[in-house]
Image (cartoon, rainbow, N blue to C red):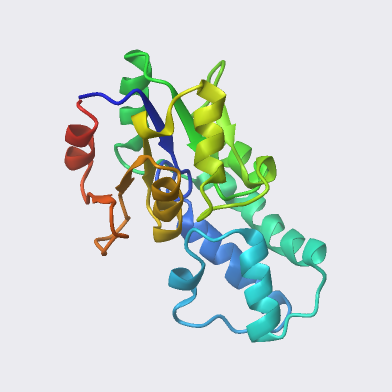
Length: 210
């Protein structure tokens, strides 16, 4: 059965942007003389910019103020954002649901600057489109507030909505919001308890009743 509302994560879920986020972070680290650990991607996947900054400061000895640090990362990111591609199959599903009249929103832990740039790069924008960025909430994922705000925007009961996310952090947010939560990682991995774990576009389509 098609859900009453679907709320999508952006990075890694709708847009194949995680490699660019990783490259931008590595570039910023190198510019201040820091060496990225081998497990950097796993440690920052789905996390907020503030979380990553705290990690850089507490574990790697970063001394730059946050604004200067994030500018280093975003300068690299924005210079390369034009090469982003959608995650295969995701935007097609978004458009099918839209044609069916299903309310949808993009719910991201990224700043508004990145949300708008990413969606523009892959051509996902339309009149009335609703997006929730890290700048629009007090608490980011894994707190439930981002997904709950999306439900509030549409006046939808969270229990009747579906959250789709590629990170454990994001899936935990959807679960905490009381939504049916689909964990759709970019590569197979265990999901949090309570999430529906899917690994293919075909499985996602079937789960959404398409």
